[in-house]
Image (cartoon, rainbow, N blue to C red; front, side, top):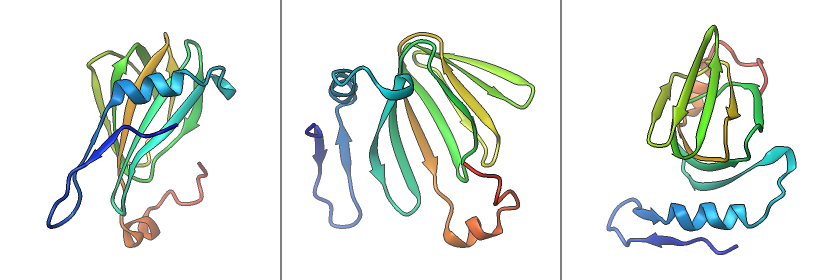
Length: 136
């Protein structure tokens, strides 16, 4: 699968542009997926991760947490996120921001695609996180 990414030359740092519809279509062309979902890492740097996730209706990510603060932006479909004693339904165009270390699960209420953005902590911050050892 060829990435449809445009890298723009910069004198400092990076600038990349992604064709999300192209990437979603490319991922969907590889159905069926194990556990009804698949993903593609779009960008990975020391302090930032951007992941495109595509899920079939009814697919579920079991409870987990992120060491970094996250945002979840629904591009297509609808998902449900359960955290602590709360349930949040997100449809196309909705965005959720979630602080680090909050346990949550994700369920696709219909065929869905969303962007997961993680503000990745530094090594020093990771070592200092109190929840270390919780697991995935």
